[in-house]
Image (cartoon, rainbow, N blue to C red; front, side, top):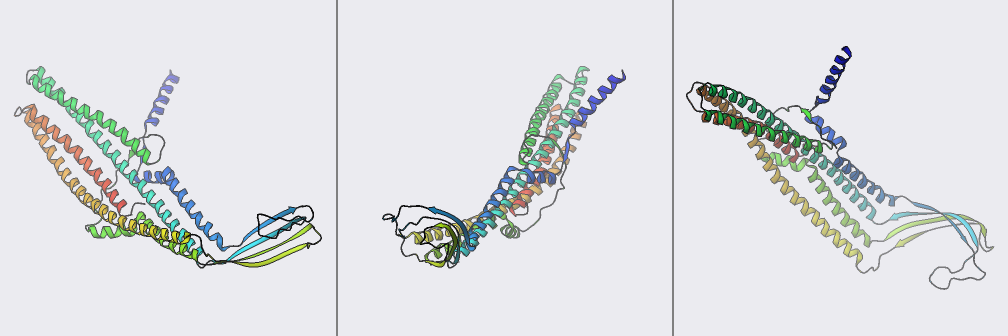
Length: 425
């Protein structure tokens, strides 16, 4: 018997542990998203990939050194008589050597290319910050949506409980002949409506948590005990100040500016193609097996000046293309700044309106509850019909849902304003 009791207790304890929900704050949700969301990881890899292009371009500053092993054999008096303008003689030999080439100057082309790639890498880093901000915005919205869904579910459950009590009371009074069957029918209809609301709210909660887990980058759907965030007032009463802050701090605006600067630098690099390129070259080696006319050791040094003379207008066309693309990048920057000003203004207005709705819905809820109390008292005293009580119950339920919706919508809009001004990162 004792063993059976212990077994049952263990099962109940395990079930209680399984049903316990993990406590999750908004900050915890954001940290989980930034740590493991595929979008963040992909953006980080993209930023690192672009950063490597800076080293690719800077490699032109350093000497190029390569080793060579060459062997050749040919019949006596062999000459290459077609296909080349170099020395056509071939000597039997086997040689090893090293050749080094060093760029002396290309009149600023490499320097401009390095600056271009640095600016592009900076723009990509800002894109990473923008990606993080977008993911955080999605997490915040999903978090507050889940809290709103849970609040509506609590309202629905309380409504079901309250209306069940009314049904029980009216049913007892109807059996005693103190209330009509019509009152009982109205009460049951109200209860059924509340039960439908609860079923809908339960589905909304499941969908909200699925969206929250996806926003955090989690592969499976889990439910959490969500912690309430403090209700902060609007951060600013001046829309123009918020716009200035957004144009200064938003990562996508910074990325567009860097991209425009990179395009302008690339114009200079393409223009430098028309200038000469000067490079120094040196080589040395040993020829252990050779024709008698060859020396055992060899070495040489020189320089090479490459002057573009004619290439069918290739360089001028590339320069023209770069100039037009720089103009496109600058216009895109201006367009983005205009859209940011619009979006920030709209977000600022929505925050102000949302904060006012929170206060108004709080007042509405208090008035609806007072009206419900009066309607319940009048109905209990036989001074009103079930229709008046039903309407008061409906008003109270709608006021509670509106109050919960206004609170979490305002917090989501406040988060959206932080995103629009570049503070969410």
